[in-house]
Image (cartoon, rainbow, N blue to C red; front, side):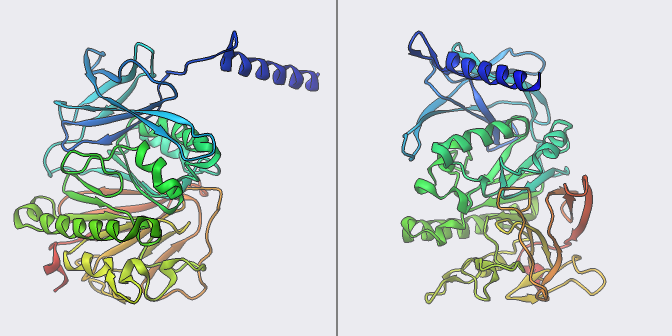
Length: 443
């Protein structure tokens, strides 16, 4: 009986697949929205909605409202041709919702008369800086062995987070199987990313075809209201968050132009964030880039080298290193991934520990704090640590999980690591206290 059931199921699946692929020798037009995800606008009164259809539609529309879908906003669609052998075409739809009320829950769906998504909801960010945003932070998450996905889905839909930060390496890989793996991952993430702004930075696993799947699928607005998924910044409560690409340093097809352009942008961005009025309003400066400067994993990645490229810059030239730049402008917290582990560093600069004190190392530290959170789960499994870690490595955890962060106010920031291997147990905690921000905090 069991085998008969299996055979019947397989026959039904094959027939159904044929029916939905071809009807009367004609291909079915697929205009149903999928892969819906949100990203932040330039203020709490905005929200960007992005989705995909496999065929073109007559409009790109979001219907939304406080309790019913009584507002409408239209947007744009772009044609994305994947670089694989099939040259598959996807249509990326983007609608920027404006004039929203801050700290307000909206319901919405997206699509057109050719097909609509399910109904989702989101809560806009609060205005100002006198509130305590909550974040989920993770990197290196794939649709194979994506162990953190179910817990993230549950916590997002219980309204535990205001923003999600995905610190590179998405889907593993978005281009695989002519970009079908990218499609499937974004479908898996829809129950997460359709409810909370999903802010990303690029990783090495997005490199194919000049990072085209990453560049085309997301919608990160820079301060000039242009989409730049490779480097951009945004504000959440008392924090200014800067996302950038570490990959320019490792893929020569991008050339010097992108390295120089991003470095100049980073310095200008940090200068603006350090203007007295800006640093007083948003004292926390947090960066997110995929490949870390420091790590104690037992592999040959850049961060295992004493003079890592991300930290010190291009070999022989010694130019465009990021450690001195971030130290110069008083970056408080640096978020990384790439290593498939969780590792918390002591406050560190130039490979030296600068704890605030022996009893309270994270109270008024004299250097930035680095966190690696790259163990959300992917097909490459976890990484091992070296047996004898360097002195700047404080905590090393090699199991699957993600990081929660709560910025209480302008002086207190709390982080904890959640283990999926241990059924959601918190396996590490850190409270960063800074009575001063900016480069003067190092004095």
